[in-house]
Amino acid sequence: MEHYERHCPAPERRFNCLIPPPPGYKIPIKWPKSRDEVWKANIPHTHLAKEKSDQKWMVVKGEKIGFPGGGTHFHYGADKYIAAMANMLNFPKNNLNNEGNLRTVLDVGCGVASFGGYLLSSDIITMSLAPNDVHQNQIQFALERGIPAYLGVLGTKRLPYPSRSFELAHCSRCRIDWLQRDGILLLELDRVLRPGGYFAYSSPEAYAQDEEDLRIWKQMSALVERMCWKIAAKKNQTVIWEKPMTNDCYMARKPGTQPPLCRSDADPDATWDVKMEACITPYTEQIQRARGSGLAPWPARLTTPPPRLTDFGYSTDVFEKDMEVWQQRVDNYWNLLSPKINPDTVRNVMDMKAHMGSFAASLRSKPVWVMNVVPEDGPNTLKIIYDRGLIGSIHSWCEAYSTYPRTYDLLHAWTVFSDVERKGCSAVDLMIEMDRILRPKGFIIVRDKPKVVEYIKKYMKALHWEAVASADADQDEDDAVLIIQKKIWRTSESVRELE
Image 1 (cartoon, helix red, strand yellow):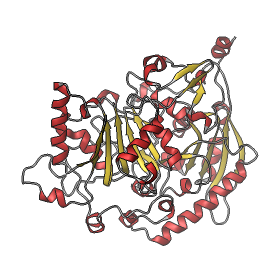
Image 2 (cartoon, rainbow, N blue to C red; image 1 turned 60 degrees about the horizontal axis):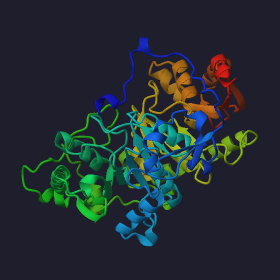
Image 3 (cartoon, rainbow, N blue to C red; image 1 turned 180 degrees about the vertical axis):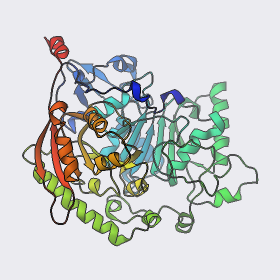
Image 4 (spheres, rainbow, N blue to C red; image 1 turned 135 degrees about the horizontal axis):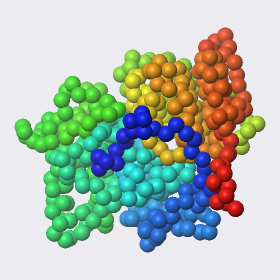
C-alpha cells in the first residue's frame, strides 16, 4: 500500500494554478439532508454506484446521488449494523456511545463513510479513512455529504494521529492483510486505540469455513492473543476484540514473545513522516495507576481538563483561560459572519492551527464538525484535542493537505501565514492550497499580524476572493482579523460544456 501513501511532487512538478469547479457545480445540499444525497455534478464519478449497487453504497437518482446507508457488510443499513454492535457489547439502550464513554472512532477503509455518518446521531465522531485506490473518490463523497473523513492509508508510515486517540477502530471488509510484516498494521491500530478500546472486524475470516479463511483466522487470533487483546463479542460476520486496560498482561508474557514491546525511549505520539514499528506501545505510568484513560464521558469530556495536559506543563487555569479566550473570539467571528450566513451555511470546518482545540469546542452548539490541524513542528497538542472528544491530524502547511478539492466550508487560519513565512515556505502556495480545499462561496477567517493581512489582500482579486468583514488589532491583541468569501467562478470550457 506504500504507493497510496502521501507524497509530494518535486517543486518543478507542482501546479501553481486554481482548480475550477466542474461543469454544473451547485452549492452543496445542506446538512443533515446531505448525509443521504448530494448533487451528481459536484462529484461526477458514478462508477462506484454501479460497482457497489448490490451493497447499497450509493444510487444515481437523476441529478443527485443517493446514499441508502448500505455497506459491503451491512446491506440492511448502517443504523441496524451499529445497533447490532452495541447489542453485542451489551451497551445500554443498544447505543454504541455507551453513555458517552465511546466518543472517537477510526473507520479504516471506510467506503463512502456511511458508518461514520450514521454514528453522528449518537454523538460519536468518526475519522473515516480511505486511500485514493481503485474506488477513487470515496473520501470526496464522504466530505461532500458533510461527514468527517481523511485521505490516507495503512501503509508503511504511522497514521497522523497520536497514541490513545480512539475508543473504537472499525474495519468492514476493508481488504487489508493484517498479518503482513509481523502484524505491523494491527500494531498501528493498537497504538491509536485507548486502554480498553475495541477493534470491530467484519470480514469473511471472522465466519467463513473455507481452508484459506480458517488459516487466516487462526493466525490472526494467535497474533491478537499475543498482543493481549481479548474477544469481547463474536456474532455472525463480526468479531470485536478489546485492548487491555493496563500493562499487566504485557508484563506477564513469556520472555521473547512476539511482537515485542516498543523501546522505552520511543515516542508513541510522533507521527509526521514516521515509519510504523512492529511493536506494542505500552502504557504510561499514569495510565497504569489510573487503570484507564481517566477521561470524562461526552459531552463533559469537551470542557474537562484532560490528564495529558500535564505532558505540556499546562495547568487547569491555562486550559480554562484558553477556552474562555476562544469562545469570545468565535462569538466575534460569528457576529462578523452573520450578514452572510444562515444556521446551516457552514458544515465542514478546518482549524488550520488548532492548539488545544478550543476553537472547535466553542462551536459545539452549531451543526458543524471541525478538522483540527496541529503543526508538525510545534507542541503535539493533538492528543489533548482527541482527549477532548474531537478529531484532527498533524500537518505541515508547507505541503498540500490530504483532501480533495472543494471539501471545506470554512478555514480558520490563526497565525498560519506567519508560521509559513518563518519556515521559509511560500504564502502564495498556501493561498492556492486553501483555495483548492475551500468550497465555492466558502469562508476563510485569517487571524494574523496586520502586515500579513495586507499581504493577503494583494492577491484576493486573482484568487476570486472577496473581503466580507474585518477587525483591526486592538489594545489586547496583536492580531487583525480578515474574513474572506470565495466566489463561484467558471472557466470558458466549463461554460461551453453546460451549453
